Length: 137
Image 1 (spheres, rainbow, N blue to C red):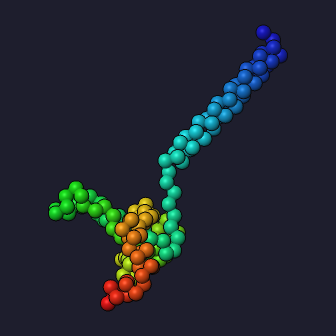
Image 2 (image 1 turned 180 degrees about the horizontal axis):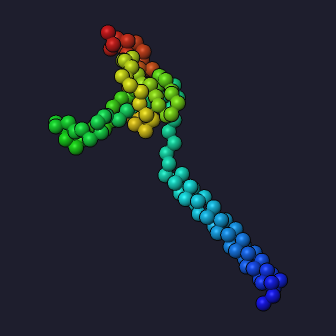
Image 3 (image 1 turned 90 degrees about the vertical axis):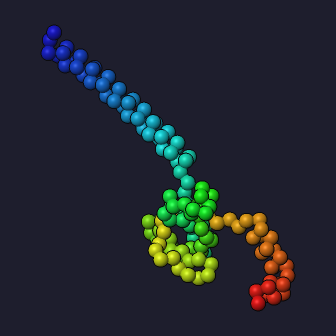
């Protein structure tokens, strides 16, 4: 085989290799995109604003009260978000106005939704303000 024929054969093989590399790269990008979409389906984005009401996880998480056993409450609150720090960290304040000792990461808090009973009491207090004032005295 002459050197020109050899170079021509090698250039054809190089073109095939480049085409296979491009195809493999596009396949890899497609797989990564599908993996990202699958991951993002399970990802729960939580961010809280100032004055949002939240539940805070009871720490340590594995601690169980001897009286309640497995029915020991996992969350406590409600707390009000007072400060929002970078890095998904929040400063919390309880309903009585006492600040928590430390800031807490966003993965340890969740949004607070009032129960039906709390909504009922709020509606009564709004409908009959004189009743709620006499009740507090």
